[in-house]
Length: 212
Image: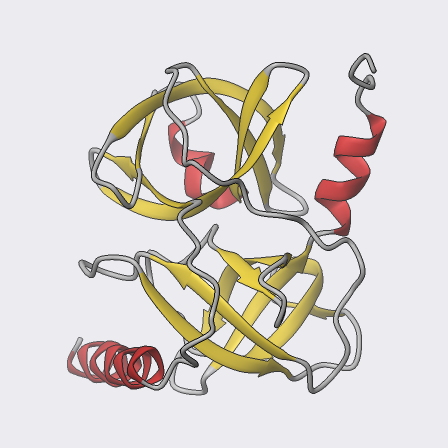
């Protein structure tokens, strides 16, 4: 327990330092949300309306234990909405897409970049670690392409600090487009596991097209 507290304290200190050192031209991501449950929370992000449905993306394990329970999302403005329609749940790839049942959404959806990032690319993530409000941390792509790590068959390894509560949050490229989803970390190392957006892109492209 003392070691875990030390690791979390170090992670929070690093995240705070990274947020303070953020470039002044970093995009303001109002689409990042907190996904709250009675016994915990994760992060997620709004990707817009498709075929009249407001869609939020998160990690599969964030909602995996509460599939039958409505999920409350909290916007950065403090407003809340309820989601209880699961459009995609993939325990193998650790992904989920949920529909909002309330007419409440962030003003600007996150734009997706389906092209995998390259090793050394600068990235950032936004989320709600532990009991903090939304924070942003920065890093670089550490792996050369995807790799198998832990329970995840294909992940990108990032040299970027995350902590409990960050899971499901978006990972941005330098243009502010989402290139991945946070799903885990290796405590004490600064390395994080990120699912590439290709799986989400493939799912969206398989859906019926909206009328012109």
